[in-house]
Amino acid sequence: MLYLIGLGLSYESDITVRGLETVKKCKRVYLEAYTSILMAANKESLESFYGREVILADRELVESGSDQILADADKEDIAFLVVGDPFGATTHTDLIIRARELGIKVESIHNASVMNAVGACGLQLYQFGQTVSLVFFTDSWRPDSFYDKVMENRKIGLHTLLLLDIKVKEQSHENMARGRLIYEPPRYMDIATAASQLLEIEEKRGEQAYTPDTPCVAVSRLGAPTQKFKAGTLKELSEYDSGEPLHTLVMLGRQVHDLELEYLYEFVDDREAFKAFVEKDQEFFKPAPWVPPEEDDFSD
Amino acid sequence: MLYLIGLGLSYESDITVRGLETVKKCKRVYLEAYTSILMAANKESLESFYGREVILADRELVESGSDQILADADKEDIAFLVVGDPFGATTHTDLIIRARELGIKVESIHNASVMNAVGACGLQLYQFGQTVSLVFFTDSWRPDSFYDKVMENRKIGLHTLLLLDIKVKEQSHENMARGRLIYEPPRYMDIATAASQLLEIEEKRGEQAYTPDTPCVAVSRLGAPTQKFKAGTLKELSEYDSGEPLHTLVMLGRQVHDLELEYLYEFVDDREAFKAFVEKDQEFFKPAPWVPPEEDDFSD
Image 1: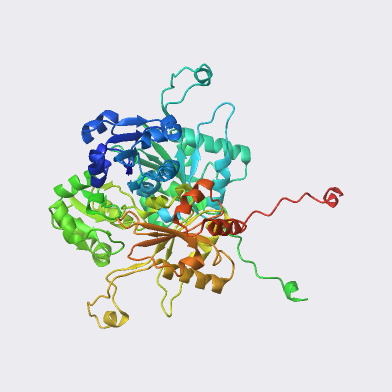
Image 2 (image 1 turned 45 degrees about the vertical axis):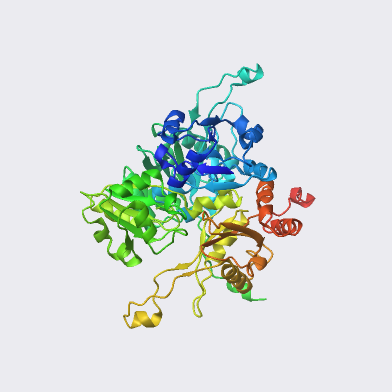
C-alpha cells in the first residue's frame, strides 16, 4: 500500500494520530522536500518524532524516479509525506496514477493545507475564487499570466489566494550547464516582493485588475508559533517587513462581509483608513446601475 | 486560552497529535455538533479516545450561549472542537470575535476539511471557483441563488464545489410553534437529491449555467473508510445511489487538464462517453473566436 500522508503546516505534531500510526508501520518513509517546508520541524526532528528514517524525495526522484518510491509497494507499506495536504497546492496525481498502473493500492490521510487554513485570516473560504501562483521575476522572465485570473476573480467579487514562489534545491544556469550538482540557497518569496511584482504588472498592463490601494492580507507563517496577519493596501504591503518564511498573500474581492471586515480590523494599523480603502475598492467592477429604458425603446 | 481544534473528516484518530495533546489538557471540551459529523466516530468514542468528557454544543449554545463556552477561558484552557477545520465551510469567527472582546487568547489547530480534501477526487484545487451551498427544497422554499454563482464559475472555466445540506436537531414547524423540544431525525442531502434540485433550477432558469449533460463528480464519505467517487453527467448522478452520508458534489469547469481527466477515468462507467461529455461541455462559455476586422473598419 502507498500511503499519502499530509503533515499539516508547521510542527512535527501537526501530523494526525492516524498519520503517525501509519508512518510508524511503514517499511520506507519518503518526505516530499521541494514544494514546501514544515516551519517548526526538519528531517532530523521528524525522524526523532517518528522513530524512523526519513528519505528526502526531491523533484527528480518524484518525477523521474517514482518507480523507486513505489518499489515493493504491492507487498509492503510505503509512506509518502507531503507538507500540508497531499492534494493541496501541489498535487501528486501523477504518482498515484503510476501506482494504479502498477496495481498498487493508495490511501490518503488528509491534513490542513494553506488552501483551507488561510481561512484563519478571517475571510470566508467559500468567497475565494481560483488560486494563483506568483513566481520570482528574473531579468528576462516576468510572467503576468496570473493577472487575468486575478481580474476574473475580482470581476465577480471574489477574494484571491496568491501562493508565493519557493525555490529549493535550484541550480544556477552556469552550474546546470556545466553539470555541477551545486545548489543555490533556498529562497522563499516575501510579502514585499510579491506586492511589488503585482504593482509592476498592474503598471505594465494598466487594466486595473487592482490598484496600489487595493486591500490585501499578508499571511505569514500560517499555523506556526509566530503566525502573523497584516491587512493593508497593496502599496503598504510592498514596504512591509514580513519576517521569516513562509508567506501567502490574499487580495480582497468586492464581496466583503461586515463580519470579515470586523475580523480584519485586528490586523490593521488604522481602522478608518482601511475601511475607506475597502469601500473605495468595492466600487471596482460593480455591475452598472440599472437604467430605465427610454421611451423610444417601446416606440416601434 | 480558547483552542479551536479541527477534527478532520472521519475517524477519532484524524485529530492531529498536537490537537489531541491540547484536548487532554483542557478544562472543558466542547464539540460543535450541528454543522457536520465525524463519519466514523461519535461523542462516546471521542470521549473514550480523549479520556475526557465531551460537551455537545448545538447551534443555540454557540450562537446565543457563547459566554457560557468562554466562561473562565481567561484563566483556564477550553477546547472547542470542530469537524473538519475551524475555518472550513462554517466558520466560527463570531465566537473568536467575542473571545477577543473578553480579552481571551485564541489559538487554532488546523485540520483537513472538505474545502481542501476534495482535491482527492483528482481535480486541482486551484482551479475551483467560489463554493456554493445547496439547501433541501421544501414545498414553499426552493432558493436558486446558487445558480448565479455556478454560472460565474463556469463562465471563467472553473470547477464548483457544492456543499450539500445537513439538518441536525431541527424542529418541525408544529413542534416549534408549540414550544415542544422534539427534534426531527437528522437528514443529509444525497447526490441524487442534489443533482435533481440542480436540474430543476436549470429547467426553471433556462440560462444554461449547466445542462443535464454537464460532467460532475459525486464525492461520498470523503476521508472515511468507505470513501467513494463517481464521475458522470448531472443526469446520471440524479439517479445515482450514493449510499451513506456525507456527500459533496463537484461540477466540472471548462478548464479540465488531461491529468485531471485521466484521474477521473477511474471513477466512470464508460471512459469514451465521459470524455465526449467533457468535450461537449467545454464548448460552453468558450470565448468567441477572434474575427479579423472588416476592411470598412479602417475606412474612416
